[in-house]
Image 1 (cartoon, rainbow, N blue to C red):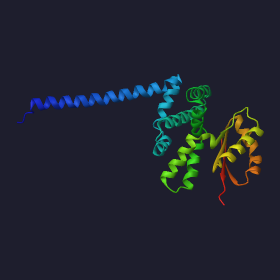
Image 2 (image 1 turned 90 degrees about the vertical axis):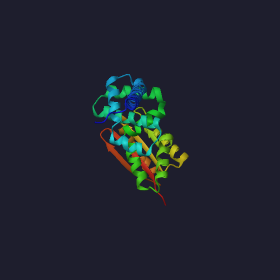
Image 3 (image 1 turned 90 degrees about the horizontal axis):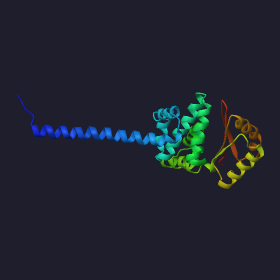
Image 4 (image 1 turned 120 degrees about the vertical axis):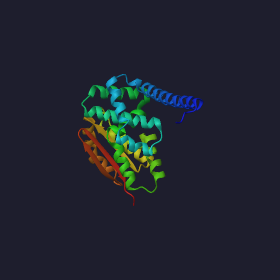
Length: 226
């Protein structure tokens, strides 16, 4: 028959208890921090949908190449916007867009829209087509996320076709963009389509790839390398 050393048992129990307590404490703190970070949304159902996106396979792919926590958070917002649109929760979708704009300004909303509009997935695909190294791939990916105004023009329903064309040409010429995207949802998608032919006439050194789905229209202009 063997007996545990009472001092050793007590010490082991204390250590195990401390480890368990520490683990629970950390999880509790992390949960509170996460909830506090989502508090700006001010809608319980939307917050629950955001939490579901933490387990998204699409988000898992983004995490492989993006380390910036703030940007990853905004990409989660984009997944949530897309989910709300799919669920026909238009009021909640509009409310979340407004909340993102109020807290993260126009750049934060545009980063979320990259995911909402299905732009980021295709942009990653284009980068992979010409990949030379993982480091360059990550650098190019972060470039669009941090300098989104150089690469994407988000069209609003009140925008005029002539202004969209003029703005797109100005941005492309200013930044010598290798890839430039024009994106619109709902009524704005029709406006984007109406600009397509004129843009093709003007951007002779670019090839066009269109991604149309439902009420979305995304025009990807890719520079032709000679």
